[in-house]
Image 1: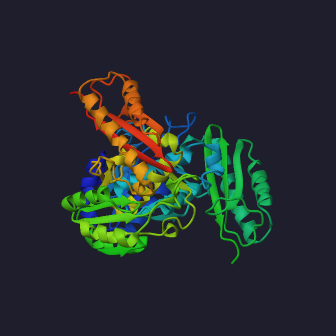
Image 2: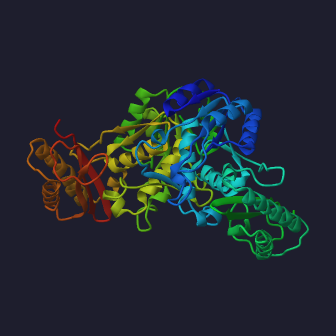
Image 3: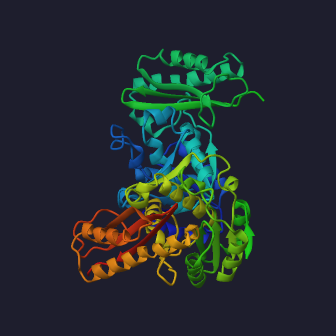
Length: 283
Length: 283
């Protein structure tokens, strides 16, 4: 595996592979099994796998965790190589933004609910950096984890609207043995917070079971059930609990026959965790 | 020359040429010598030349000339082929926008003065469609005429900020024998308007001469000179006359040593014409 720090060097390295299938896994590093599952899938489906590790300032709000976001390049490099990465792109902020960017990729509608409402500007930052990375790597296929389901929906919308020549491959959430969705931010949790955080997946699994059994007829009923279950944990502070059509992320009234996402964002102390489940709806 | 109407067909046609140099000339059709000079230059510098003809609704305001914008595909096809186009891409609005686009490429600062002030949303429409076309054609080099100097500045800013893998080639304005800048909109002019419209280039050429001779020290003095000269023609209604730094398009106070653009937009009856000259500044 080669570690590459400049755009120009990466373009040169990738030139010989332009007739082959290039898979791309964009990350912010501090890799966990979720990221590595994307790499393994990319390895199976592509000739060459490029991973980027870049903590993108553009997608962090002024009071968010940009400065303390966890970083460990030597560990990440070892894990990435083992999982099958061929080129690890690790640019500096100055390399990616030599001047303040005057250009933004702005996606509407699908960016408005959920994390888009809690984190203004977040998805403009995500879409803009992913657009830049797609132009730098020029991948055939790009792999994204469904823990960030709204991010997947935003990127798919952007790719479709702007005709990016890339196939987006959404991949299932990878979880700890007790159900907690893997996240680089899980390291922030105190032992007690970590213990209580398992309620997110438990509430979502219970919601999925209820949806499959037709227990509820409206989104509000699902939200109330999930909210109440999460609030049994005293350290949980709910940011949102929402049941929406997927991937449009528009409101649903009647659940019947709808593909929906149940998505949650919950704070434990200073740490904000997100999780979700998808329910296919009846045929 | 092949005429191609769908994105998928164009991608298939261009596949065999991916290892060669692809030149791209995006246009709205109704071709004149200005467009054809771009094609000739692309032919010299590239192995394959793709031209698009697409009157992009996104870049027209609600009271602008989208519906009456002149169109003549058979004539355009003959001219394009003669000048050296290999693939003429002529998509329908439905092909380019099968659904209303939720994604926009928004460029700030450089889009704000001149036509950006007179035509709100215009450059977002331009940047978005050019981004789409770049993803569809994937050119190595793209050719733009400097009559739309602000458009060139916007596209260059977008390409730099978003790392599009394309070189932008700005090309000189082509003029009628009497000096009027070539434009598809010139056909709108009545004989009397056409006669008076020559004042634009006359005023700009005089301004360039004055700048070279160091006649003025501030942008305001240049603007006043150009404005007064244009207003000698009774049918001329000035939209703007501006002298700005180029390509940043930011205000300049002192002219000395600055690369500047003197840009004008003037209405003759219902027809809005633009023109400009660049002055390199002293070394």
